[in-house]
Length: 172
Image 1 (cartoon, rainbow, N blue to C red):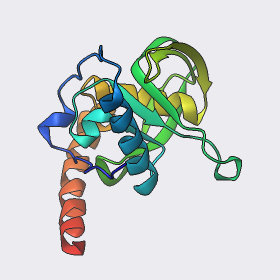
Image 2 (cartoon, rainbow, N blue to C red):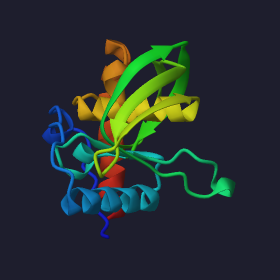
Image 3 (cartoon, one colour):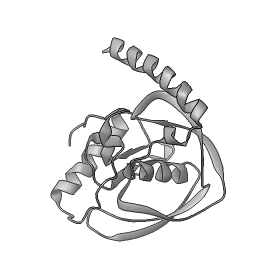
Image 4 (spheres, helix red, strand yellow):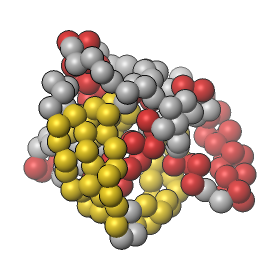
């Protein structure tokens, strides 16, 4: 396993839709393990393949409370098949470091996905799990949480984000 580089906004890889995965092999398993290791090290609760520069429909998530231990979900070709209710929570993103904003999403979702061997799964998620699934699946469609911001908030974000990037560069 290896830590992968996390790409930051505005890198173009984050805006392109990811390709459906059709080959379930050792390369896919290695990518999933690397992504999980990268997510935990960041630290984060979710990571999509485009965030590590790979334009494939693969996400990893773990929203389990720390005291419960790891609850890693590896989802290949995930899609939200239904959603209900409303949630508006503050979100952050490993690809948009240092910036947080409230985003409206479904409170509960049903997600269909495959595992790394091609097995089919259908899960119901709520709370942080629901938000995380939606957030990471957005990455696969080339969408970032900042795309949900109003034009005014997006303008303020761009100004603030330039300062955040300068601070990050100074730390290196």
